[in-house]
Amino acid sequence: GAVVSQHPSWVICKSGTSVKIECRSLDFQATTMFWYRQFPKQSLMLMATSNEGSKATYEQGVEKDKFLINHASLTLSTLTVTSAHPEDSSFYICSASALPQPQHFGDGTRLSIL
Amino acid sequence: DAKTTQPTSMDCAEGRAANLPCNHSTISGNEYVYWYRQIHSQGPQYIIHGLKNNETNEMASLIITEDRKSSTLILPHATLRDTAVYYCIVKVVDGGATNKLIFGTGTLLAVQP
Image (cartoon, rainbow over all chains, first blue to last red; front, side, top):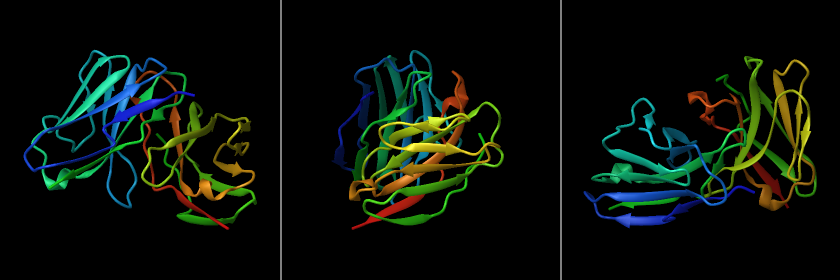
C-alpha cells in the first residue's frame, strides 16, 4: 500500500526557534499534500493544501508566515513552524494524494515547545 | 462538502462484528463516502470508500443505503487493535481544492475483551 513517511516523529525545542517537519511519499508521486494539526482530544484540523511547484493554500485563520510550506517535488513537502512558541505545541500530521487514489497519512510529528 | 453525523462512542465485544453508522443526508451525487480511523497517537489510516455500491476489502465492508443518505462501516471480527476513532467523510474526487478531507469528531470504538 501507499506509504507516507513523516520526520521527525517527536521534537522538543526552545521557544523562539524554528522547526522543520518533512513529509515524504515513499512509493508514489503525490500531486497534492496536506498539513493538519491536532490538539489533545480534538479532531484533525486542516491547515493548508500544498501542490507541487506552487504556493500552498492556507485555511482561514492559519498564518502563512508562521507556518511555511514548501512542496518542491512530487515526493516531498516540508512544514516549518517559525519562531515557535508553547501555543504551537501540537501533533502535526501530513497526508499525500495522487488522484484517484485515497489520501494516505504520515504517522505525525509531536511538537513540544518549552 | 456535505457534513456527516456519527455517534460519539460505541463499544464492541472482541470477535464480534462492529457496525459503525454514519448519516450524510445532504450528500451530493458526485460525493464519495470515505472511512478513516485513527489509533491513538498515530496518523489516520485509510479503510475504505464508495460511491453508491457496497464495497468490501481486507479490512472492512461499507454498506451505503440506496438513497445514499447514510452508510455503515462493518468490521466483521473486531479485535482489541481495532480500538480507534473512526471518521466518516464525504467528498468529491477531483483535482481541485475539494480534494481536501475535512474531519468531524468521529466515533470512538472501544473493543472490549
